[in-house]
Length: 536
Image 1: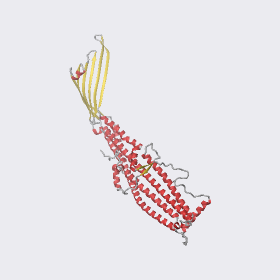
Image 2 (image 1 turned 90 degrees about the vertical axis):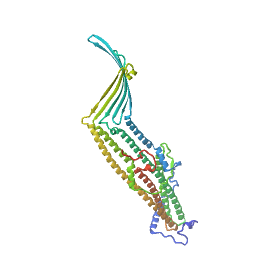
Image 3 (image 1 turned 30 degrees about the horizontal axis):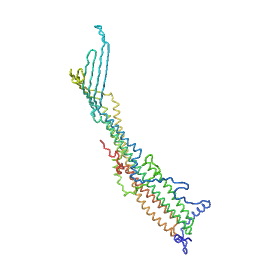
Image 4 (image 1 turned 180 degrees about the horizontal axis):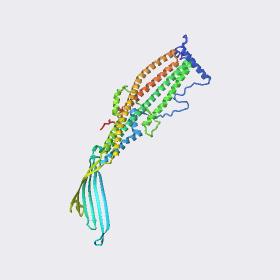
């Protein structure tokens, strides 16, 4: 008997009775013996591949380039490198150009005009039977300033000079300075209706900011989910690698005890199968790790980045406290901070502005206009401004009325604006219901994950104790290698389940903050649209 037999074969030895197995265990061992005999009869051989987690004849393509990456760094890199975010950032700037365009309606306009006219005609006087060639020249230049005010007032200031000369009159200059005022009394006479398009353009800018904020929130949530998936994949590799080492040690111990005659040869089959299962799990874990790394790299790397570079995640998924606020608090925050609800409320206010504008279109047009000018005449331009040869003035005032018969177009636009507002209100109510459902669902997922973490921590502790008992029974000869392998497998599954539950709790917590619209606030990330929408 080999020298290590006394330490390994504690269940049998000289002077000791053979170990008695239960009938169920005897049947199981008999089945394993038949399977081993069948394999030997068919000429099959059992073997363990090299300890690299890959089938024979293949090589690993995992890059050796690894950099440390924390969760905060991953989020910062994604906010810096994501092409979609760079495109979304341009949306508020683009909408801002429309607001500037609407504001320009009330900017003053400088205008000028120059005119040159020449005329030559033949006139015949029948009384005296004489023909005369009549010639005239006229040059006119005008410069002025025109502005439309939000009050519905249009002001025009102008300065005009005219030089006239003909075959019958000497050269003469006329200068005129005038002011013209037109005030809308009914249609277009209210400030709120005249500022509708400007305010709508401002609301469109705010809406684009809410859309940008929603994009940033979703991006941060995706990065955090990808990061924790990478953390989980790395931990699964470590667990499977450790389990593989334990299974291989168990296999070597089983083989030694078989050689010592302390165990039947059939137990080697179970140990080999357990090692093969561990190897299979390690291969799957490494593949999942590569996929998680690629997903994380897509979010945090530039377009031309090296895809073979891998990240060593440094943040731990275990929070300091598995705590959640009442679901009613998250619902209240969601009603206040969710970007989609704020945008929907903004659309309702935009529709109310449409009602103001279309109601203004129902009114008839009634404008008051007044024109006042002062003129001077002289033989030179400078003298005409002083009115050396004579002064004059002109004054025109009146009312202008206009009303389309039936006014059906304005009436249809007004009714459409009211119906659209009602439609937006119904859509907001439905969207709010969906938001509450999403928040409650996320809270339930987070609460379940929190409870699962605590339950699986207890399960892992119990499985460790069961494994310890199975190993003791195996060493004293009252247990089997199959029972030990089963206990090891149960412990492995419980440890994997605990790691997954911990990661899922972190991901569920992130999703809960996302659904309540407070993810960026909790992460201290500045973004347009963070302020809740306030109705004007």
